[in-house]
Length: 363
Image (cartoon, rainbow, N blue to C red; front, top):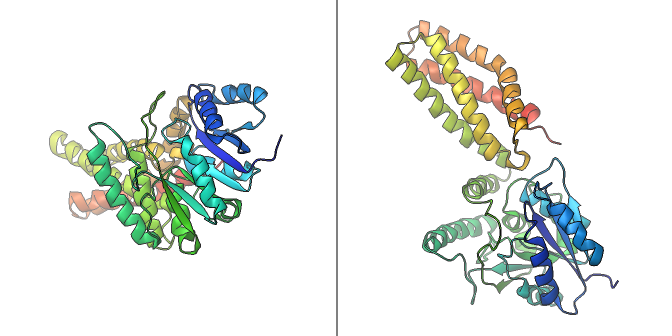
């Protein structure tokens, strides 16, 4: 088999129905260009890895990287790039929303000297989503693009794109530096290396999914905002800490609302009300962190239950300190709001270390 000129990375989760379709479409689009397809599967329960391996038995230029115990789009892209054999790597969705016919055009830009080529929905004849949400998404994308360009200092029309191509050299430099969490890997690359790169853009028509459901949305928005702030602070505020802070703020609201409800509506003694409010907020924080902050290591099924129980057990230390100190403040005639808030903040700081080191520990 001829050595590939380009490695095409397809990060995938529950894409068993789409993999055979996209592999065939890529083959049609690439023509005589030597290429390989690397499907990076996050241990999909629908058998994506098995489907890919079955294809690989007949198509030796198709490979599967199955990740067990690791989740997340950025991490999948990085591992796919590091497994690639070609001097050029491309990243595109496995759900056929990206136009595979643009790959040869993008490759030609690399041959002509570009370091990075972006498949853009907002240049030339490119287009974004269709349907009644199109205008809303377009406005949101315009705002995100403006913010991203301001941070990166490099103007691009679609820094949020998930369809891009780069040289092997850039991939090797970027892999150790960019965040493995989150979804917007292109923005991460441009924000770190953009000023020194030759970047080109190629328009493409964004398609609707044929099979399966979109797994992004609100989560992408939250993580993107966290990444923006992290870049604005020069990395002094890690994305994960910012996401935890956002979730923690909602937890404080839940805590105070529960405390005032128990005291005002049921006249429950302050220590008991504070303890109940603490555990209600802990449950809320656990659920939100599982969906947002640690989405790449999301706990599901029985692991969610055992994770929550572990979280309760370890965080009970902070909860007891919270209740003890806030109760003493309340007995010293501090207001309900101040005493309750002080205890809640104490728990929040303690709980951050627990979530990082115990509940969603790195694997």
